[in-house]
Length: 520
Image (cartoon, rainbow, N blue to C red; front, side, top):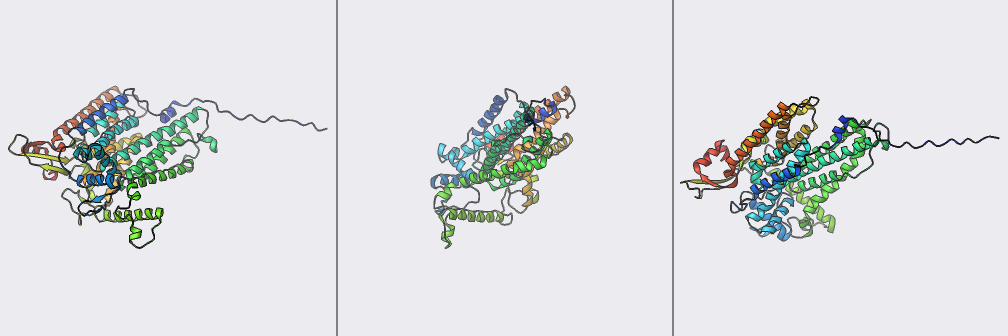
């Protein structure tokens, strides 16, 4: 008789918490900020807000492109689409509507007047200071460096002028910066998941699904897609940032997986993350189309019934989208046709080297000028000159070079991320040398240029990785950083009359035009 032997089934392995090396824990853990970080950031933001909201209705009337955007914003809220008052017909415009919806929101709050159409840009400009302060704190793990970044933005002349003018560029900069901040939060969240996985006994080196943390919705990554959609709904130039965001997501995820010992980090990242990357597209497209809701839900917008008017069949839903596509084709053609030969402008930037000229303040843009008396002198001048604070802007090129040096020497991901974002804002414009361009096209790059400056200041203050802290170096670096920020504040105060349209004696006005005719 054969005896049946019952072999006990092996017990399933249970995860056991294992100690995590300190170096790995430091790489994967989010920065621990000072408990006073939020109050400090809010104080910097309050200062920026007071500067931007003070006497917001001055100068009177519509200055520079407020002629277009403040008017378009008014009609968007009245009719749902832009309107040409002169011809009493639907208005044809080449920028998406979101920025004008926001300008119009301010007009709804304070009325169709100077304060009303400038309110939204002042609010978003102020909030961008808060964003940059918090992003820098998180990026560098330092309350001091974060406040330095916020102060540099708060006391920049270009940012100040555009925060007090009803143009679109502040909104574009805000949404791009907010998207970058959301992506930083996604990075921290994803790395924290890997840290918990390893702490709980997970083994990233094994094969299969067990080598990865449980599935979780990357909400911050989806928020990034929404914010990029908002940026695109302000200006199409935001499209240049999309591939940079994709590369940052993949690079950071590969780095996290390689750090914890995943056997094939590149392959696994592509397999796991491609779906989430593609899932962001409907969010971006949905937000963008929502910004056109006024045009889509009404009948009077320019080209709204292009199919019908051209004798073609126009289905209710798909016909509207096809008409919108035709609108975009026309707008793209208009953008291509805006060249220095066909549309020259007194304050246009110079050709193929325009982005370099922006950093050198080679051709600022005059928004307003008046020679009306009021300064107590025989001759007075009042300007609103869109000019960056010189000490700040003239330090950008050296800071970019130094950031490249420190980033390579220290293999620092922060330098690479900041440089990639600044490059996405500036490099594409080199490929349009014949286009009529203006210095305020550089505004989306400004926060990242400031982050480059602050990164270099932080590198001066801290010892290279692997070396013990140097108190003398920290002290010297802190003095340098503090003196630099103070010089920027003093320079802003000196040029403030040119930013705010204050009436000053002619001689004082002339002394502030450091580059002579280039700044006139």
